[in-house]
Every structure is written in C-alpha cells, then in structure tokens.
Image (cartoon, rainbow over all chains, first blue to last red; front, side, top):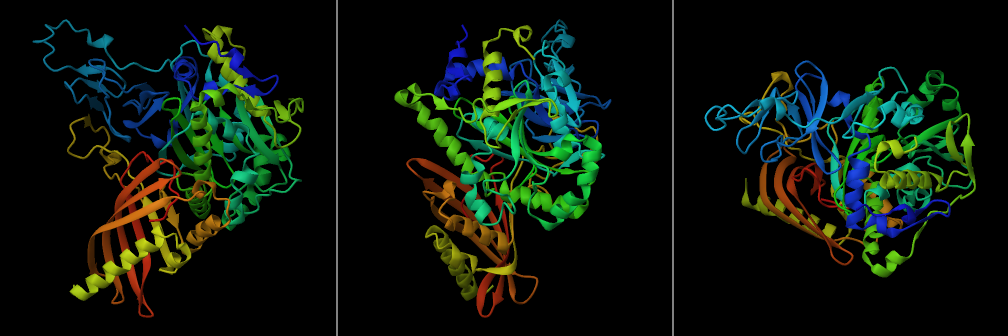
Length: 424
Length: 180
C-alpha cells in the first residue's frame, strides 16, 4: 500500500511536510517510484573509453556495473550474481573480459552473459539454463553528449523526451565547445548525513543560500567576483519534468576566479553564443539538477555529481570535476584546483553545506517539529513561462520556484502507479 | 640518523599537532615554507594484478594503483596561500561547518626520518590518526599516512612538502574541515 504523498507537498501555497525527508516508508516508496523508474546518471563515456572498461556505481541503492563490452557496446547490469545475490564486481573501475563471483565462481562476460558455472555437468546434471541466468540488465540505456543515463523501467519515455528542453541547458554546461567535456581522473565520494533531496533541491534552485552560507568563502577570496549585492541579474528556470537550472545574466562572471579561466571564458564566449544560439547571449546557466539526483555546477567549481540515496537520513555523494575537452592544459589545471579547493568534501564552499543539510534532516526526527511544514513560498506568483527560455522563469534571481517544480514532479511520480499516468 | 636529530624532528611534529589541536592556525601556517605543496590523496578500490576475480581484456587498461595520481582529483591540493585563505575563512565568523568548531586530537606515530634530496632537507614519514568530535555527538576518524619534506630555514624546521594519504575510499566524515 503506497503512502498518499500528495497532501505532503502543497506547491500552490509553498508548504512541504518534513515527513518526506525523514520517514522510512516514504523513502522505500522513493526507491520504487523515483529511483527504479527515472533515468539516472551513471558516468561519463570518457571514463570507460575502451572495450572491457568498467565502472561500478549505483542506481538508487542497487549496485550497477557499467561496462563497455568486447564489441565496444555500452551496457549496464545489476552488479549482483544471480546465484546467491553476492556482489559480483568489487572494484570501482578497471578493465575486464569476464567477472567471476567470489562465492561459488559463477562467471559472466562483460556483456552480462553467464559463461561459467563450476560443476555444471555434475552438480546441475546439465539442467541449468545458463542463458536465462545472465546479469540483470537495465531496461534502457542512452547517452546524451557523453553523459550516460539508464533506467530500470521499460515504460520510461526515451531519454531525450525525459530530459525535454533541459537538453539545451545541459549543452550550456557540457557541450559549449566542439568535443564537449572530459572529466578529471578520479572521483570524490563521501557520505552526508542528510536526506538526498536537500542537496538535489539546493543545486536545483537555491541561489539564496550562497549569499549567507558561503559568505565566509567569498570574503576569503575563494568566490572571486561572485557578486552578493542587491543588483545582479539572474533567474531560476525550470524547463519541465522537474529539471531545474539556476542562471545569471550573460554580463556576469560565472567562473572560478583563476586568471587563466577568466581569460579563457572571455575568449570563448562569442563562440559559445554562436554554437548554442541567442539564449546563451542572454544568460549563463550556473547550477542545476536533472530530476531526481544528478546535479551540476559551473561557477566557483566545475563539478557534476550524483546524490545516491542511502536511507532517509543518509546520502552518498559521488562528485566529478569536468573541463572543456578543447580547453588548454593550464585552464584544465586551474579548473582542477578550483574544483578541489571549493567543492568536494574539503571544499571551502561545500563543507558548510553538509553541516546545514545534516541538521535540516535530523531535527525532523522530532514528532512535534515534524508537525510543522517547511516554507517554500519564496517568489510565489512571481514566476511565468518564458517562450524564449522555453522554461518557467522566476522574476527575481532568488526564488523557490524551482524547488516547487522539483517537488511537484516528485509528488506526481510518487503518486503514480505507472509512467502512463505521469504528464511530461 | 643521529638520535638527537630524530628527537628534534619528533618534537617538531608533536608541537605542530598541538598547535592544530589548540586551533592556533596562524602559528601553524608559519611552519610551512612559501613554496609548500600540501596535498591529500584519496584512495579507490582496484583489483590487484594477481586477482582471479576478473580476466583482463585490455592489458594496457589495467589499473592497479589505488592511490590518486597527483594531477587527478585529490581531497586537498593546497599552497601556502590557499591554506592561508582557509584560515582567513575560519576567522570570518561565518564558516558554518566549523562554527561551533571541531574538537580535534592529532595522534602522530610511526615516525621515520631519512636524508633528504639536499643537505638542508629531510624526508619524514609518519602515520596520523585525527579524531574529530563536534557539537553534541558528531565524531569522525581521519586515518592515514604523511610524507613530509622538512627544510632547515634560519635554524628552524619548516615543512616544504606534505603528502597525505587518507585511507578511506568513500569518506565517512561528512566533510574535511580540519587540518592534518
């Protein structure tokens, strides 16, 4: 019996119940109706360029092995042996033709096929149908500009339809120049004691917190020209389906304050406008979330990340640093350093976020605290559809309009039995 | 290595640890040379060459090293200026992850001293266990190894290079807001 969550999310009045951030029953329903249903980000293609390359990740709490098979085809499978459910691959990344389970030695090819079962003749009398016991594949897998996504729901709409107009905004982060992006080697992985929706909504639309949460880092010089006065331009945009982007005006600097990066950005700006069209001359996307848990950032630090859910009050963050593939080496290096120093577990911006999200989650354990809804009313009635931006846009740069779009989508998915009931 | 020198280095490292635990960060910063690189690598999980859990398809793509490479992602990759920036940030009174501050205890052990690349330098190996507790019940353990280059400058030791290895793969602390 699914929980009726529709009364917990009141976007008309900007009220959201704290129960959705703390209750186990709702969390379990999220695993089914959000994470086993939506398109989730797996990795960037540049991480697994050659046949046999693999990358271990998760979709929700399910361990998933992303592999480029011997023929060069991308695939993704539950990283689970079909025999006793042991975790098959234990390494984060590597290259393999076959994977062998540590328990009884069942082995699988990098295309998921079960190819080895010890004592199959003697112990199974040749009756085991190997072809039926391959690794469980994802239902659909597609890439968008090198970003690999998958879903476990065969009824989910195709990736491009799911992303909708968000594709243009993804281009503004990841396809600004020929060749798109590549990632710096390695990942930041760490555990945050908070509900996964807090970081997801933060990247989706919380420009508001920057001027207070991160003022210490800005004052200490890590934000550079990041303006915190009353005048800057910008708008919170939702192009639909719960996806959200924060933008600043095109005249604003939206980059890490390293001289190499600033000079490079100034130089390539006209090329970007030419490549992406007039929208790129009107605004600069700076942060965003692809519903539900893939977020990205451009100023201060070029990072994208997945918020893996780990229970109602725990999130495992996997964060990458990305650079334009075409950028010169000194720009890539400057982005690597800015990325490490400002975001990530030791980042001078990010370390304060974790502390706030932890407390926002944990106070919800109190039954009395839980009776009182959270306030998401900022900018109610000051948002409208913008035909040029092809998105719902807030009038002022700080607004909770994106939060409301995010949670409206969340409530739709949580209430629906299947994709056919969900409006796109 | 002379015993007197070993004791000298040990006392230097213990004093450094005490400065950190007493949150005397400006004095701590003065222990570094101006050209220091202060780098903390993370680790990942890889199959060793001998593993029979996989068969390799492409030997050129074998990745055994579980330690981050120096031009890849790291937990920290700092200069003296950026360490100074981190301390300046704590001084603003708005560094919320450290307000109220962490209480730390730096345990420095397994100290080994070797000759350095120049007559004025030493290579110093040590292990660290940093216990952090904060607010009511928060607690974290940061455990790993340090490789320092100590340089004699005007009759005193300075840290000219610090390489830190943090042993966790997925970091269990919510943040790394303390110094090592």
